[in-house]
Length: 296
Image (tube, rainbow, N blue to C red; front, top):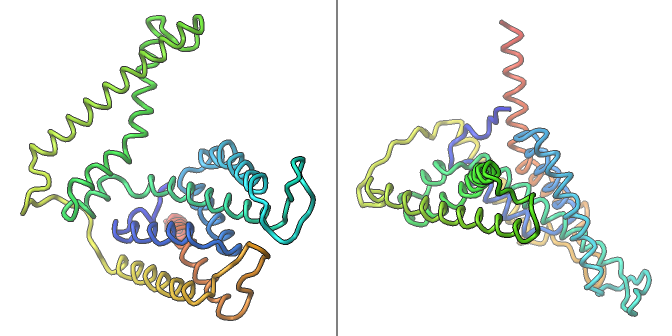
C-alpha cells in the first residue's frame, strides 16, 4: 500500500519521527502511552499490512509480556502490597503497573523505528544531513540499510552452501557449527568489502567536499510548509505542557498524575493529533483516490 506521508518532504518526515520518538520515550503518562502504542501499531500495519501484524504478534507481544513481568520480579517499591513472593519480597501494585507502562513504551518505540526504516530511506537522510555532517550521515545511512542487505545476502550464501552439502541443518553438531562458522566468515568478509567499496565510491565522487552540489528530487512546497507548521505547533504546545506538569505521572510510592482537567485534556488531544497525523493523511488520500476512481 502506498504511503502518502512518505511523499512529503524529508524534513517533514524526519521532524515528525524525531518529535514522536522523543515524546514516546519521555512521557510515561498512561494516556500518552496508550496514544503512542495505538498510533504506532496503526501506522506500522498501514505501511506493512499483514507482515506488521505477524511481527507484532510473534515478537512484540511476547516482548511486552516479558518486560511487564520482569519489573515486579526485581522491583519491590510501592505502597500497595498485594502479596509476598517466595523469597519474602513484596509484590506491589505500583511495580506491576510501572512494568506494564515501561513495556508499552518499549514496544511503541520499536514500532515507530520500524516505520522510520520504511519512510526515512537512506537517500532522504543523506539529503538532509549530507552537507552538514557528510561523514556521519554516510555512516548512518550505510548502517540503516545494512541490516536488510545483510539478511538478504546471508540467505544467498546459506542457499549456496546448502547446494554443496554444507547446510547448517544437516550433519553432526560439530559439522553444523563448522558450517555456521564458514557462513559467518563469508558474511563478515562481504560486509567489510562492501563498506570499503562504498566508501571508495563516495570518495571518488567527491562526497563531502566543499561546494559539491547534488541532484535532488525533493521540493519543499506549500503542502510541506503546512504540515511542518502543524508538527512544530503541536510539538511546542506539548513541550510547554509537559514542562508545566500537564503530562506528569508518578508511579512510586503511589500512583498519581495529571487528571482530566481541561488543560491536560487539550494536551492529550494535541498529542493524539500529532501521533495519528500520518494515518489520517493516508486515509484522506485513499478517500480522494477512491472518489476519483468512482468518478471515472
